[in-house]
Image (tube, rainbow, N blue to C red):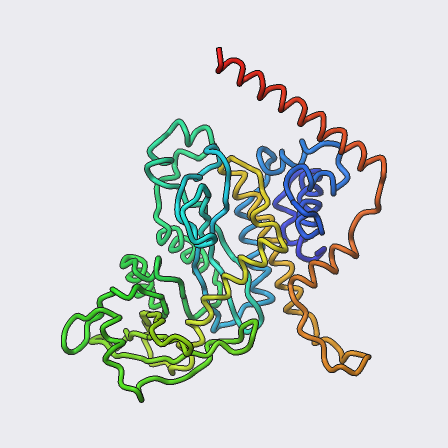
Amino acid sequence: MDAAFELVAGRFKRSEVRQRARACIEGMLSGLERKNGWTLAEYAGEQTPDGMQRLFNAAKWDVDGVRDDLRAYLMEHLGEADGVLIGDDTGFVKQGGCSAGVQRQYTGTLGKITNCQIGVFLGYASNRGRAVLDRELYLPRDSWIASPERCAAAQIPEHVHFATKPQLLQAMIERALAAGVPFSWVTADEAYGDNGPLRRYLETQQISYILAVSRTHQITTGVGKTRADAMAGKVPRNGWQRLSCGPGAKGDRRYDWALIATDSSAHRLLIRRSLSNPSDLAFYLCHTPQPVPLQRLVQVAGARWTIEECFQAGKNEAAFDHYQVRLYPAWYRYITLAMLALAFLAATRAVLNPEPASPTGTGKLITISANEIRRLFALLTRPPVDESHILRWSHWRRRHQARARHSHYQRRQLKDR
């Protein structure tokens, strides 16, 4: 952790802000049940949450510089020339309508429409590990960008205009290219694969991609345009190959795969078929300027799921979704520090040597996980228990809650008059 934070320390000009940021990251990796401004401040030994909230809302520090530093840190430990960039978004469920970008919208996190914010992220996967490199907050056009007053209240800068999720992903890929991130592939789900401008951008940059597309996606073959799902029905029995797209929690993820040529030598349609339910199909549009073996295409398609693992680890281990900030800059500050906490776990896991054999004779230990690293870090670095500090914070919370309840009752009375 010392080595990781040393890389970003210069982005915090004042020593108290720097120390608070370090304490915040340690709190995010702690065993706290909830990790917000109040609990992080209490864990750090502070008297009130004012300083921790100021770190997210008003303190002067270079949040994009921290993002750039953690990206370089990750490339030092995970970077490979054949790495894969993965784009995806995830939802953060919120109450009320004041948090920047919040509205009722669909989130795959819950699989339904709910009141939430949507963050678009750029992940990275290699043989050495996986992590999150970049982030952008999606701002809906009608409910936010079209309302200057609402944007001003959330401190959204005037120069921020509406951008679709694929456009946000493209901006992050452009930053990765400019930073010299080593990678050979881009993959994402069909919300991005069905976006023509994003595909054309990647093709212009001569970037190989394997993007999921919808079953209605049109491909052009020697006999004309055909829907992707119609092509699946034309694959002969011997046209399917059973291959693994990578290890899962319960073993290799094996599917049947078929590769279909198009009228472009650089484009092919990859079809995945479930072994247990042959009607369950998934479709991927592949762009490779040079021929690539089917097994490698399958591996890259399977790498898309690593960002889901990053989201799960980020929310479970690094408090991605615990925040209670409302302002647009505060979202970036909190998420960037949480990304640094997750980067620490990924880099630590990458450099650890294989575990020794178990002394009980039960065989080798399982590879250490991000969860176990976080747990060990939390136990080995937790501050000593101070009874007076604990009781003082209990009294502070109850006083604050009493004032909040009194204010709420007063507002209700004014409305009822």
